[in-house]
Length: 350
Image (cartoon, rainbow, N blue to C red; front, top):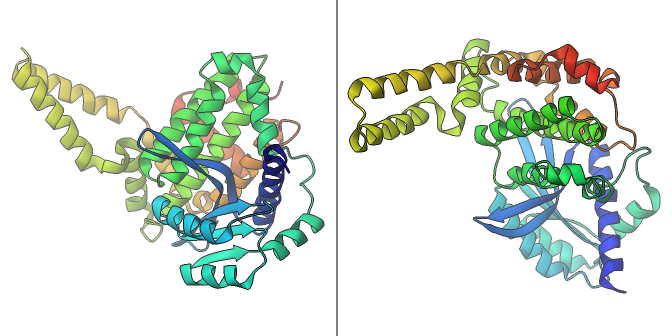
């Protein structure tokens, strides 16, 4: 069997398993790039996420080898190391190997094994969801789109957005994804020939943001509304370093300006004042107020799943076909970016 056939079988099994975990209640991302420094190290076949309670989340990485010679023992060690590298809570290996030895070794490492018997049953009983395109079909749409390639390389931007999930979810992650979503929101307003691709991309990035915010909320879910809102606002405004860390960076930068330039103390004070005013204008209170409400954060995973599904439908889903919680979340982002709701909705309704 040639490598192309092996690759196709692997992709098909990844789709089968994505569907399986989706049906089991997980949020799933396929093909998450894992980079260390400037090196493209590997891909995570499946990154799966579960909200087990208001205070607990579970992130798992899945390694899939649908090959005649799967080398399961080696893959167990590999996925065990991958779990440690990306700080996931658990690891799963899906392999065609049916030996009890593999399960025993997996149990010793704390890695769940989905063996050949399970995969055969899955392949024979489960088809692809109706109306959904595969990961390969999704990204082929962008490969064929010259405009998307020339205008900011949309395919690379989407892979870049995926890669955040292998480096750990933080406010920096969330804020970067919000910027990516804004990019595609603007493309929806600007483009006509590639409106479908801009819409798919926007839905997918907004789905990622929902998962990020849900994960971040586990640390503040026990707080009262006001302190929870303040925590979120500081995170959206200042990133992972927080207000204190950001102010320290600003003060260090201003100190260098004062020391190595002709600026006097008055000029530096004006710069400091302008930076503070610019931060206040960010409007992060809009996001914090919305996502701190129980009715908003309780639905985040469901919103993420619907947006992800909308991105991968054969026919692009219009705004009017989304449910109320999804629409409300999109409205909040539009308000934050200063985009008129009616203008955006009209564009998606064409």
